[in-house]
Structure formats: C-alpha cells, structure tokens
Length: 506
Image (cartoon, rainbow, N blue to C red; front, side, top):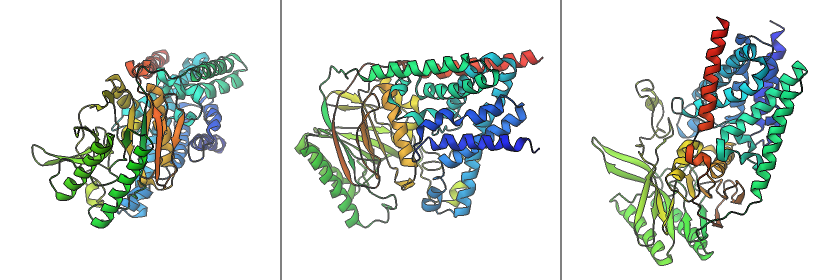
C-alpha cells in the first residue's frame, strides 16, 4: 500500500498543474508538463490503479479550476454554505470520472499497443473531451486546449479541429515524453515535438496574413454597464431601474458619437421585454426605438420575451436586434443553464426546486436564428452557449458574417470564472474565422478578431464602452463547414482499438 502513495500524489500534482495553466493563475506553459506525472503512473500501472490515479488527478483539476461554484448557489440560491459545498464535491467528483475512465482505458491500450501508446493517448483524450461536451447536458468548460488561448500561432489549428485539436497536441507531448523516457527511444517525443513546432510555424505565418473581406468594415460598440447580479428586478425600486436604463442609453450615445453604427448591450442588464404590454416595458421600448431611429444605429440587447404556450406563458432568454427602421429580430437561447434556467431530468431532480428559489423556468429556443445588420447576417449565442463549439459554428455555417455573444458573469464575482469564460469565447472566433463581440454585464467584455487577437477588452466590475472597427466575413473554415470530424475520427478509432484490445486479451 505504501508503494502506491507517491504515485497517487503524482496524480494530484498533475491535476493541480493543469488547473494552474488556466485563469486567473495563467501559468499556461504548465499545461505542457502537467500530465507527465499522471502518464508515469499510467505507463507503469494496472488498470485499477490507473483508474484511481486518473480520478484523483481529475478531482484536483476540477476542484481548483471550478473553486468558484459553491459561491453561486450559496449567494444567489439561498442554499446553506454546507449544502453548496456538497453539491460542488458531487459535481467535481462526477467530472473527475472522465479523467478516471481515460486513465483506465489508456493503461489498457498501453499493454496491447505499446509502441503507439503516446499517439493513442491524444486520440483517446479527445474522445473523452468530446463526450463531455454532450453527455447529459454537456459541460465542456475545462478542455485542456483552452489553456493555450494566448498561444495564437498554435491555436490556429482549431480552424480545422476545433479546440479539441489543441488538447490532442498537449496530451501527445506529455505522453510521448514519458514513453521516450521509459523506453529510451527518442522518436516518440521527437516526432511529437516536431509536429507541435511545425504547427507553431504554420500558425505564425497565418497570423501575418491580412484580414480580407469583400464587405465594408464598420464600427461596433460593446457596452458594459456594470450592473450587479445582486440587483433583483422584481424588488428594485423604479427609480433605480430608470437610472440604470438611462445609464445604458448614455453609454450607447457615447459609442455612437465615437462612430459606432452597431451597439451591443449585455444579457438582460436592464429589464426589457418587447412582447410585454406593461407600461414600464412599453416606455423602455419607445425610448430605444427613438434612439435607433434618430441615430441610425442598430442595437442588439438581451431581453426576456414572453409568448402564450399551449399550457401556460413561456419565457425566453432572448437576443433582440432592433434596427433603425424599427424592425426587430429575435434569437431564443437554445442551450439553457441546467439548474439555473431550468431543471433537467425533472423526474430525478424533482426535489431541487424545493430547496432553492434561484432556478428559472425558461423555455429553450429551437433554431439558430440569424439577425440582420445593413444586409449582413450575424449570430448571437447567449452566455453559456458560447462554451459549445458545435452550437456556435452552426451560426456561421448558416451564414453569420460575424458573431456577438451577450452574457451575465456577475454571478461569479471577481473569481476566475469570468476570465475562463472570456478565454473560451476567444476560441469560437478562431475556429470560425469571425470577429466576435462580447458584452458582459460586469465584464469581461471585449472585441476579438478572427485570429484570436483581442482588439479591445474591459476590466472586471467596471463601466466601459468599447469601440472598434470590424469586418464581416463570409468564407467558411473547415471546422465551420464540416464540424467535429476530428473528434469523430478520434472517437471512432479509440473505440475500435478498445475492441481490438479485448479481442487480443481473449
């Protein structure tokens, strides 16, 4: 038993190092060595020990990466700190199973395909990241590739593979290093390093290319009003709501004075509803219509729209685009936040709504609706949706010439979450070669170019008005056009090799 203790500590070290590569820590270089301790275990252990080591590594990784989770249900859901912490432990323990299952299968593949084990490790890891993107409701938040968001030359590969290709390279380098070290054969590590360096060179050359567009550029603005999530609209005095609304109008006018013809407000930073008959909403709508009509600017903002459903009124988390001719279009958020905007699998989690008041009853949208700005189509994934690569790329495949995402990250305070969320959004710009505008209620807001370069970026918990010129683009990347072919290839090949290992054992 004592012999196992040092190796299990190595697994925990792997998880901690990997988490330190993400914001706020930002030691992004650590991701290239983080998994080395874990792979030393996997190459020298049986499957049972590998499973435990992987689970401990995953537990330490998600425990540190998602340390901010208990704060949300405790502060906004009226749950006790103890119960919030228990929910957090259950959640990270579940996510750690993906690391555990990877480690268990990798230890098996090491036995039967030893010479190619380092290559199979990358494919197998991509398979599990892809499964995590869709399993149950999906939670692709801590994908390893995101740790390289600042490594612009390398992440250009995501135009082909999505973020999963960057994760593959990270795992490949660690696994090949350990295999070369243990077998005294240099070729695995040398080949992996050559591939990574070659992709850096290709990406560096891509970054030197100018951004060409057949469309005229225009000035866009992102508004950050810094409205705290502690503001509950049902209990906020009318005078305060009026002040906040006027505050956003003033910021918009400032942006328009600086040349912006397209202005973005965050997700539901002011209570707005174009489909509601109440006097307050009608008043706000008329004033917004006056703004766009007088200034000839287009406004995208977050609203909470209603419609009469078959049984009761349905509520939609909405991105609404208001044009100078007073026409407007709506996109209804499709991928809702589980246990935030709705309760998934109600037959199992029927008790959740009894212990917290923080869960909404939002109806999901059903289609990737595009908006129109001066004849140009654009997409507007809302908040949580930006973490799903396939969901976002479908806006572009459908014709979006640029992307806008509105969000409310105020729930997470000054924790790492807003920084991590911004970093994830950056990848969607690169994968699809589109400018991306991000408007966050309390930050971080920003304007990102198609290569992942941050043109403008706000600070957290500040009022800001970001203005920059952007170019609509129409060419589709391989990823935008064909989606997750690389991930499906990894998943299919991994499955076949696992089956082959079972046949070899027999």
